[in-house]
Length: 228
Ligand SMILES: Nc1ncnc2c1ncn2[C@@H]1O[C@H](COP(=O)(O)OP(=O)(O)OP(=O)(O)O)[C@@H](O)[C@H]1O
Ligand SMILES: Cc1cn([C@H]2C[C@H](O)[C@@H](COP(=O)(O)O)O2)c(=O)[nH]c1=O
Image (cartoon, rainbow, N blue to C red; front, side, top):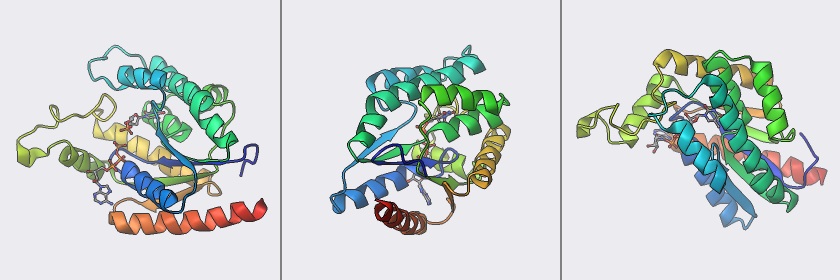
């Protein structure tokens, strides 16, 4: 665990539709209930400038956006986010809950697009000033299941809304094979970072997933408090 800041940096990762937003919201509610100061945020975005970058990255009309530009825009949004929001909150001793961080760039742009992972790591080390999450909840789901959840969330075939018309962003619209590579990327990361990453089966019920996260988080928090 990196101890160069006072707060705790917790990230949620996983393929599209895995349930990250659902679970991070539940963990935030648990902290709220226990009066523990926290910040709930997300990437890409999380700041005014980051949200503008997010709009460019995810707009399905931006067909000419190159792979290198995509990597750099995610890193630019992250840099703004770390400096303006995440590091100040950690310095105040808060728990920062962040929906996606550098693991997403490695999985989506590295494993998914086939861009060199070491290069993405190096760009992001610069962008994030070397910030590493203390704990990561990686929620795994097969891309078919994730995509079907996203379709339902945006209307679903039964409502007559087609997938193309149904709110999928520029990344979500990529073919299933791309999303299979992304998932394998996340699973590889979880094997390579067992100390930091807690891997969870996102195809279990939302309650079962949350039980798993909460148990691990309370255990992790107790250890962190003990170390002072
Ligand atoms: N464990 C679960 N079982 C069934 N449905 C779920 C579960 N978790 C979340 N959902 C539903 O699946 C959809 C996607 O969930 P959510 O938005 O939390 O995923 P996400 O990982 O944040 O998606 P993305 O980051 O791709 O937008 C939502 O409609 C949510 O209610
Ligand atoms: C941080 C980050 C994200 N992505 C992808 C993952 C998703 O498809 C979108 C973000 O949408 P969400 O609904 O807010 O999860 O962007 C990526 O490709 N690379 C990244 O670094």
